[in-house]
Amino acid sequence: MSLSSTVSVRQPYYTGTGTRNCILASGSSSTAVTALQDALITCYKEDTGGKDGIYGSKTKRAVWNVQGKYDNLTQDGIYGPATRKMMGWRVYTNGNATTQCTAPGT
Image (tube, rainbow, N blue to C red; front, side, top):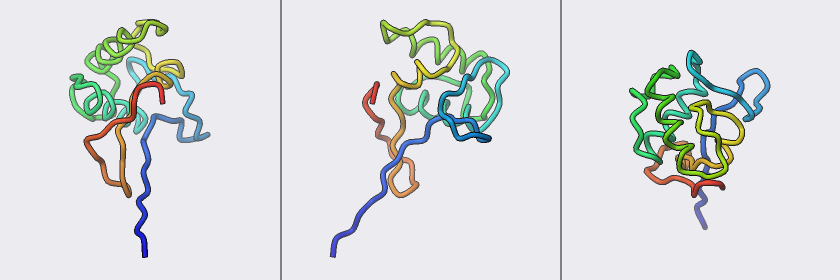
């Protein structure tokens, strides 16, 4: 008998439609922001002020820092589809957070 694990990542998305092509910026507050903060903290060691779901000045600065790592991203501190496609994301196994992250751009 073999055991299998479910491996997933959590990316920000609009709860109404489920689309991952969301825009998050200063003043946004939601579980989407919490998912973004989780990746910024875990995968990039950025200070977002915590995983509070509020896109404040520290989260904006963290996004700006990450955008600066990639030549083809506009460094504006606003999270959108282009930033999502370039970022690495925290890996979950069977719903449990790990310390691993996906490779950026995957």
